[in-house]
Length: 190
Image (cartoon, rainbow, N blue to C red):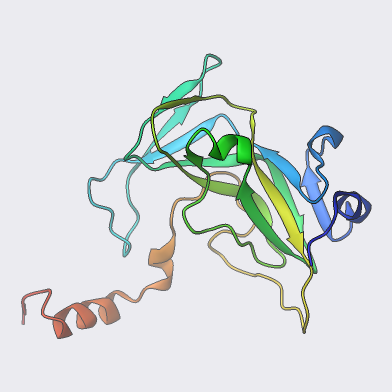
């Protein structure tokens, strides 16, 4: 089940923390989160999931910034959220989607216990000018059944800003090399 706006407000300070919180962003069954003024863009032509990739950092100026198709922009919410006993779900707002802006590639579902800023994986269908501070997405809270085990990770928990992929922390380089060898994707060097 999804919490209503009134229930979200009722649980503020207990199961739900949203900082800063502004009443005007509370919806009938969600809360709008705003775009921070920082963006990151990968500088690599080919991204490598087994290692960190170089990033360029940008600040969205007051007059806005034009985003272009074919480029992934990592942004973040202005708000820091904390969720206990519920599953947070991040979705784009319909007004943003109608401009051809997508705010996440696949990372819309948060974990119970997540604390931090939401990293946005922004892509656009055509060039579009964006502005810092705009309500860009919405957070929805789902109730859960069963025993709750809260998220506890050294990758994204309690982050301080935009988080590029840290998948490489999960990967064992020796295991990955062995897998590539078994599929014939890497010549033997031994």
